[in-house]
Amino acid sequence: MAFTGFEEKDFATFSIDGLDERMEAIQTRIQPKFQEIGSELADDLSAKLGNEMYLHIAKHARRTVNPPADTWLAIAANKRGYKKHPHFQLGLFDDHMFIWLAFIYELEGKKEIAEAFVSDFDEIKQLPDDYVISLDHTKRDSIPLTDLKKKDVERFRDVKKCEFLIGRHLSPDDSKVTNGDKLVETVKQTYDELLPFYQQAMKVK
Image (cartoon, rainbow, N blue to C red; front, side, top):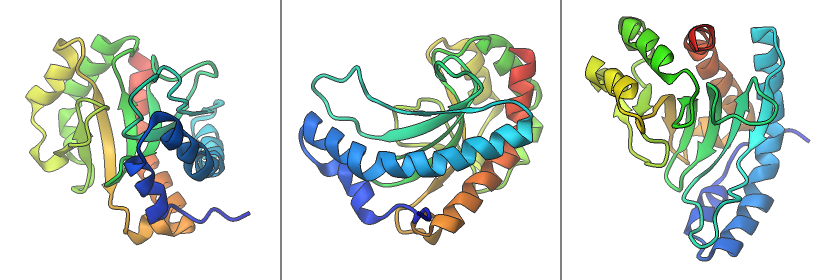
């Protein structure tokens, strides 16, 4: 079956009340699409990096009361998990899709990776102008790359809970989201542009 992209109904999942009800919608509406596009993205990254990359789909298993405000897939070089490792993400909040190279709170070798990014600040700033940065993966807001300051990257290095996610946000009605072929192409292109930073992180961590 050809991947068809994401539609308004997928984003509307996050307006469903109740943990069980929202989780059921995530599992039936969104996760099959994550499986489909995620398998292709993992294969593509494996080929480009020359090592096996593994698909992980967020289970939200620790939640007991509050329904998740977003959901995502992650692709990492580790089969057992992704949170401790540099990884690629694709996911949804109710008002946008995110495409990230992610370094989150459990990251091993964070200090070394962050120091490398401080040194590579000028290279980060040369990424396309539509890129955005997040310093907290649980928050929906982001910093436009054009507004990113070196002190933001230094904060990632110096503040224990500070994270660093870099990539793109797309609106739900963007044709790159609703058209499966366009979305696959857009995500692959974004990951390609971020690969040098992923490889740098894997080298120094």
